[in-house]
Length: 407
Figure 1: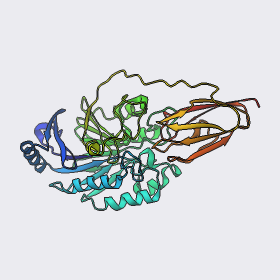
Figure 2: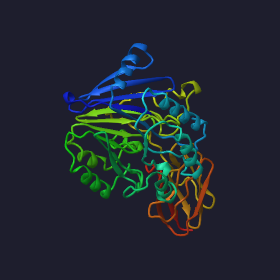
Figure 3: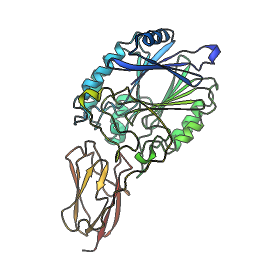
């Protein structure tokens, strides 16, 4: 969660940003002037007082929250409503009422009406001016996101992208969680990028820009799908502007980078943490001691460093199982076995043993499961020989293959 206060003066060419991150009694506030960050520890009374003065001098403020995952109830956090409520209390406890609230996706866990309803009920208590949303992949599991758009993206364009101006700042909301391809990253698409270029065409290069989407627009860790395949094209369209701030969620941890005139931030989740890039077999809910949970929800900062990390490779036997009753387990963001050989006429059953929902989608659309929550199963009978690739449409880095031989 971020609370950002923006102050613009002629001597810094409207590039001053005051940004405050706070959570459950502790937090970090930092200023960025000309791309140089300076931090204030809110636990230290002296720096907290200095930070409060900086906030008071701001012309307006807005707050970002992300990855609420309402409906999640596994060991990583059995009370996501409670932790979101704590975030709301922190926002409402700010000295000044934020003008805007921006939620950068995964409002829900399974795109269910009751999950959206619960989130709406909680956010009604947030003392902010206006609310803005972009979808996460968990919000568009049903009807290709139609339900989400009817609730949160009325009067938007395409799949839900839009822009607006506030106090001299131009905000751009992008959607990069639809039309994900097997093994791919986030996708903006040709139409959305063309719209973006047209949207900023008439703006002065001195206009401050804030862009927000769910999946990071820059490559945080492509091996886990933490990036956007065509994000560089979108960022290229913004290079001429003197001040660009890019906000994302999705990876459930703070990652920060400054590159030229662009400042990148990903927000922590209000629901559960995920491992640092390359520090686990894959992404997913990370269970930590109860006393440490809230320290990882909206507080921990991670310095992004470009590196060559290698992930563990899991080998699969091409003949693990054959015949009727073949099974594939889904766990730790992996299909096991990754390659399964069966006879023609065999039924294959996928069982989700993970804490996260997944889907089973044949590359050419031959079959498409619903979102499988923990313990859910999906079965398909292969009537013809051939090789059938499949993937998870929510986490497209997950891929598998069924090889069907003669009966």
